[in-house]
Length: 456
Image (tube, rainbow, N blue to C red):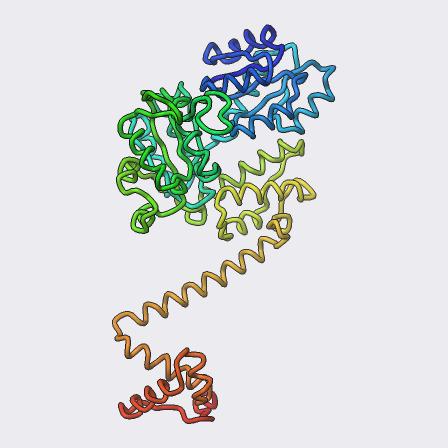
């Protein structure tokens, strides 16, 4: 754990923090926001910022966001700084630690913040098989590609792998390739020298250098520009990078994990993703199943989220009713774990008592969970019907299927040739030629106004 103390707290926090982490924390100090940012640009990195409430925390968080540093902030101050503490939390600080510091409290807060984005719960056998494979490959330095729909927990799985690797005590650095503009992504990955381009006012260490010795997560790798993929391929193959505007190569020692919610094999066929890069990334593929395919996980995750958000909002204990549990298991969850979490956060806030019933579980647009389940059931039935029709066509010739479609459409239109041709998207002349052919073959062709089937 790398901690950066910001403000006039070094004397009060450094020893207590080291004691809280039992010597397992690397603690650095920055006297101001500018010094803290300079330290981060230099690649020294931090997993958590402990910040004096007398520092302008809103400005600090805005500066971190502007420079795309995604690091949780914990405010620290005396009990007399209550207003500053409230403002810090409102600005985005995760927690508040009162001073003078208590080692046990610091340890608990740091553990809670560190665990917040890496909690990993599963119970379903399908997911258990994925985790078993993850446990097997985690200790190696092999590149791993994690695939799955959005919201299935790909980043959480990446952190799980890092925590069980030989690099667990070193940095885990992630970068979202889809969230950063193409023009800036190269600099974010490989760093840049001062003056390398307009706005490069100082040298900045890229994610590859910052992650050296640890793990680098390339989130949503499928969104990376094709031209930049060539430079990434060289970095992965040779473990050597070049800063933008730099004059000499830099050696890096990293383990690569990548994620994608797209089919990269299909992207290769479409020419938007390099096949050689896919081979380098996909030494091991961990495919996370969608939540709808692992009902055992819906149950355990639901219980966890209800407990988590009841505590977070200062509410008494909340439990799901049997009816609510049943409805949750039947819902389709297209947004997967992320959607389930947000839905249950709302349910905790909307429930009127200790028991959360299905009526308290609603979608963002106000649609009740029971309505969603009904809609999903109808959609499933429609999909099954379509699949059955598709299977019924297998083994038949195109001509046979075409004849059945034309005659059924004509029958539905009570023999009206003009309407049938319009629906079929063919000319009236083509339709008449087809009907003459079918009549010669002995098929029944409905005459105009024929209501034989409807009367039957």
